[in-house]
Length: 194
Image (cartoon, rainbow, N blue to C red; front, side, top):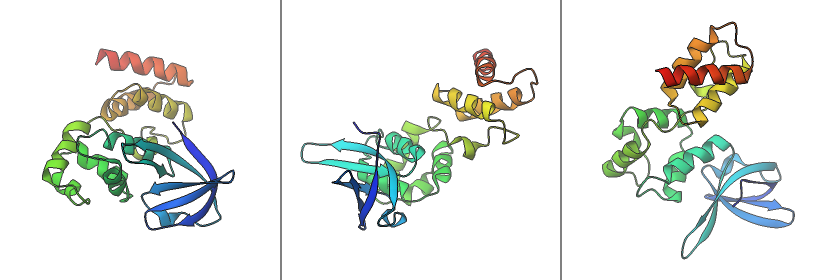
């Protein structure tokens, strides 16, 4: 399994790019290929899909996009190409908000997503996907890196976006805390007692 590939973009096509990594050209399906410029150096986070008849690479410019893709393909009836089509809309915060707010109409606007598939996405993913740290504005100050790191750690442990956001607001006002470890420890205590 690959995490990412780093190399030079050789060619750009409507559905994929060719990335030259040490003389080997990898065909990588991406949501918006024309964002990549020919001859530019790129790190592309990849997912390898293996089926009976095909082995494909799907690529993402950010790790968060790859994580969202991995969540989408866990949904019954959503394959890698459908998930990639959903990610072509770059409003990922809106997508996550639609999932968490049962907005079937928003989800139906994507190719091959009807009412049934939209309901399945909501059923399988509601409350399970957190937006990136920047999107949910966990840190009130915006400059407290230790608090931001603690928020990411709590999200990674599986706590909901809402619970972590409320906990981080409480921790931000505590002047006794200064390190990431202290914030995580105090955050876990608050989350376990709620």
